[in-house]
Each structure stands twice: as C-alpha cells, then as structure tokens.
Image 1 (tube, rainbow, N blue to C red):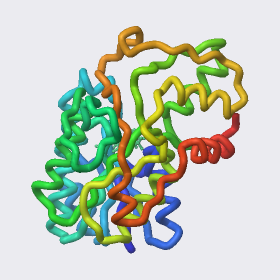
Image 2: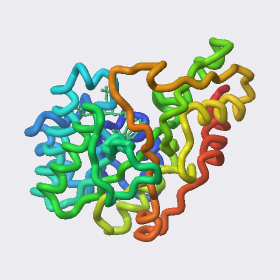
Image 3: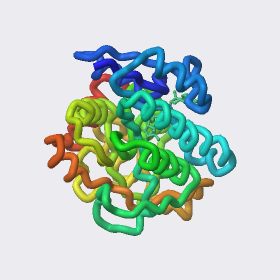
Image 4: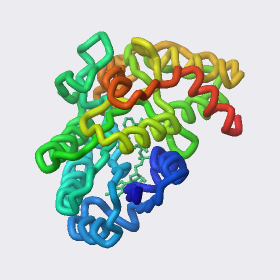
Length: 282
Ligand SMILES: NC(=O)c1ccc[n+]([C@@H]2O[C@H](COP(=O)([O-])OP(=O)(O)OC[C@H]3O[C@@H](n4cnc5c(N)ncnc54)[C@H](OP(=O)(O)O)[C@@H]3O)[C@@H](O)[C@H]2O)c1
C-alpha cells in the first residue's frame, strides 16, 4: 500500500513509519511539509501523492496549554481533521485517525468500549472529539483509533518524565486517583498496521493490557522499579496536584472489539514497558 502519514515527526509517527515501512511505501509529511490546518495544501498534497490511505498522526497534544489555546486546539484537532476527511473523501480513500481516551469523562469504573458515550472534560478532549465527528459526518470509510497514555522512545511522555525526575530527585509525587491503560507506540503501530490491512472500518480502542487499569502512581512505581532506580514515589491526589486541564478519573480502554474484528491481542503493560526500557539509555 502507498500510505501517507501526517505529523511525521511526532512520537507515534516515528514508530509507525518504521513498522509500516516493512512492507509498504510510506510517504511521511511533517508539519513543515503539510500543515493540516491549510485546506488547499492538504488537498494538493493528497492529490499529488495519490496514496491508498492517509494516517493522521498530526495533532495538537498539549493537554494543559489547550485550556488557554482553545482556538489553536480546535484548528488542528477539529478543522485540520475536517480538511483531511474532505480530501480523502474526494480521492475516495480511507482515513485512519488517532484519537484519545480523553473523549471520555471517567465516570465509569470499568473499561470504556467504542460504544460508550463520549463526554470530554477538557478542551483537548473536546477538540479531539470534534475531529472524530467531522470524519463521521464526511466519510464512510474510516478508522478512528482511540488510545491512551502513549509512550515511546521518540518523544515527551510519562515514562521519560518519570525516569528524568527520578534521576534528579530523591522523591517524586504522582497522582493516585487517575486510572488508565498506558500504551507503547511500538505496540499501537502494530495494531494500526493490522487495522488498516483489515478493511474493517469503524471506531476502535487500542491499548496495552492493564486489566481494569493502573494509576499513574502505581505505574510510576513500576517504571522506577524496572529501571532499578531507588527514588521514592509519593502518592498524591489530583486535588493536591492541580493542573489547568481536568483529567478523567478513569479512562481505561476496552480492546475487546478490536480483538474480535482484527484478532489484535494487546500485550501486557509490564512486558511492553520492559521492552521499551531495554532500548533506552537508562
Ligand atoms: N501522547 C499521548 O499520551 C496520547 C494519548 C492518547 C492519544 N494520543 C493521540 O495520539 C496521536 C499521536 O500523539 P503523539 O503523542 O505522537 O503526538 P506528538 O508527539 O505531539 O505528535 C504530533 C505531531 O503533529 C505535529 N503537528 C501539530 N500541528 C500540526 C499541524 N497543524 N499540521 C501538521 N502537523 C502538526 C506536531 O508538530 P509540533 O510538535 O512541531 O507542533 C507533532 O510532530 C495524537 O492524535 C494524540 O492526540 C496521544
């Protein structure tokens, strides 16, 4: 397949491009090469490259800054995705778009399925939901992939932040009252590849297997313990550790439908983490 990947310098895109490249022709486009908020540039690039599918890894991902930069978040995560959907629909090719667990409000206490109602708590989540809606209004052949707590070698993420802080400090405070399902970009890339080869269009959840979930606090303890660092991880509540954007208390993703549709079996979180840690310079 000829696959055009947007936002090619982002954390997920870097792993995805190498996984897809094993048996596809991949056309990576960075923000500089194609700004998805520029409607004409999007149409021109998609027409001239004539891919079989577009995978959108471009996004505004600064969850806290989005509270102040609402227009920018909606411009990229809403209108930018609308531009891609219009161009893909005109070219009659599918769009695979990456979305987030933050479309949910976290009031559930068991994993969210793609059939649960979205109700975002913050601007980032609202803007990502806008992108999902444009795709569904404009297209009929699409894959929307929601994921959670991404980490990989090439980007800023929770694992890298905890490792950095744990090396600098004797103790690090982490919230106990937010439960999620952290996911390695390497595993998500394998899932996306399987999905776009399937032709099974729809909304899917892809996340590593954390059972009913893990708190950021327990996850931070797992990270330092696996990395052999003795820094103390101190539990705090979200109230004690206020951030500009409100986060869902529970946003574990249920991957059951993804398993049924494309036989994707998520890897255990601990196994995935061990693999990523083994590839970075601790
Ligand atoms: N990270 C997570 O924990 C997480 C969790 C759930 C879902 N997701 C979703 O997963 C996807 C990938 O996330 P990620 O962590 O890989 O994000 P990332 O590292 O921030 O990558 C996003 C890329 O998009 C680029 N970009 C921003 N605005 C653009 C525009 N107007 N046109 C083209 N490119 C643009 C960014 O460039 P600049 O950096 O130069 O702006 C960056 O290279 C996103 O859709 C995100 O919402 C992420």
